[in-house]
Amino acid sequence: MLANFDFEVISNSWVYLFQTGMVFTLKLTALSMLGGILLGTVLAMMRLSSIKAVSLFASSYVNLVRSVPLVLVIFWFYFLVPYIAAWVIGADEPVKVGAFSSALITFIMFEAAYYCEIMRSGIQSIPRGQVWAGQALGMNYFQTMSNIVLPQAFRNMIPVLLTQTIVLFQDVSLVYVLSIPDFVGAASKIAQRDGRLIEMYIFVAVVYFVICFALSVLVKHLHKRVAIIR
Image (tube, rainbow, N blue to C red; front, side, top):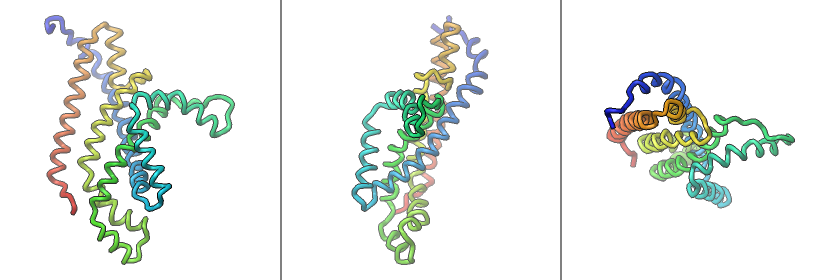
């Protein structure tokens, strides 16, 4: 097998793969992470709300999203978002959202369900007495959460948030089904063009392994340095 392995196809295409495919993958991962954490934090606060309707809505959303395959959600948003957007603005024809925008919305809303559970556990890890102390100082609910609870929760959850981001980085490769030129999609185009599927997919696997393993080591290091506040 190695005797027929063509290293030249990799050496001739790695610049394109990283400048086009990997840049796209990292960009989508970073934006989805930021949006997912923000929306997930809001959902976590809603789940912990004393208002039953708010808590039920957030719980239903999280349970629904986590019960549906991501690739199915990608197809849903890719085909339905243009029609939903047209319905919202009252347009006669589907709005041209674009593959990138559709994928970004999909990942933010999907990953928010997972970040929500991470943030919820982080918020619950903060002693209740600190909340009472904030209230005793005259802080309202949002001031207590933003100044006391959430900063500590984020610190506690940094390793877990990064672990979920590694999973997100891997999941972004699913946009390949929409013919978006992410790292996997770009490699697939080259593989199909040159007829060197084995070489390109092995190269993709090695790159993903190196990046994810390095990030996992970083997470392990952070886990030792970040003290869990009790």
